[in-house]
Length: 426
Ligand code: COA
Image (cartoon, rainbow, N blue to C red):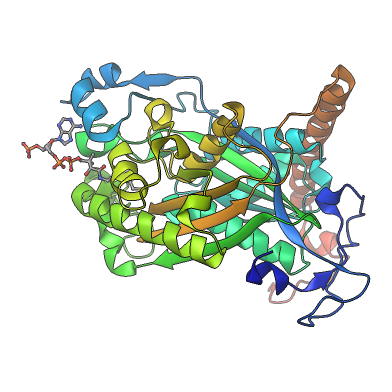
């Protein structure tokens, strides 16, 4: 056990260990003593469910040749990307992709949405400035006992989210946390700018993290930021610094702007450094690593950082960006799911997730994978039950909206039994 783990507070635990708990019975630390307390086992934050969802529509490099002045050969050789999925239907949004990915993760873990305590949605292309995409996902899942918030750390956001989820679980504040990376970057990409539109894609990935007394899970994390590079990768308009106006819209201020060369240099340096740091924190060496899942932005960044600088062999680094492009916060969880499908992850493996992005930000997590990777047998009855849960969630949401609409028709006096709300005049 690493030094970090042995210093964790001693807690009641259940979650992924299989024991049931009722919401509201979230266990609290009994003691924050340095040594083990008799009768209590340490607590760990395990990934127990995973899933992803990408839109059906695929845009290949050849399709892009029809849109901007680019060539398949250029994109392939400079980035490694061959195609990307794009949310072509207006009904596909960041939240709908996130909901699908989250449902898949809950299905793998065989946990109902009502047991989720917290939903963290990392995204660079949220549904709105507010409310949070996470709240919309919470409603879509029917996760009625969950808190929900968005996390803005650009492409590093999913790994930031894992670190936050681990903190909540180890503190005893949550048993189950959904961490989602979801994007519809195609909606904020300038399709006339060949320097950026060839790079990005849409999709969502999710993991369910659970409290467990099985040693392992997310064992260490490193988070970093250098805001002096804020202008290197940005959507300049639409916020407080540059509010939306006719001018910001006509000048393309709401699209992604990037200094690709500067971001490339930063990413190559920071990916290797963050991986080294997180391994150090987890008490591991580079040789102990079974698989690195890096942010899938550019295969040359991966080659120049984890492969060349850390001398990690190619077969220990998972790459799937040729199929999806850079899906920002979704890239690592989508790659995790595909690595599992490809049989690249087994219980006992040491994994590193490492990302970088706008901010500038970077983040890495060390994970001791400790749960079976086989998907549970699912019966038609279980599937029917799940569908019923989601239909009930949709019905509940519609009902609440309808009640609010009806309620808002009544004058304030009758709503409040004749009493005026504080601050209400007239
Ligand atoms: N198709 C064809 N030519 C293109 C092109 C495209 N899509 N985009 C740029 N070019 C041209 C440039 O105009 C330039 O032409 P010039 O030499 O006549 O001026 C030439 O290709 C080289 O451009 P350059 O920017 O130096 O290429 P590069 O090798 O640095 O690759 C990136 C550009 C964007 C692929 C690379 O810098 C990169 O991946 N940066 C990191 C971006 C990233 O990961 N962002 C997300 C972070 S989360």
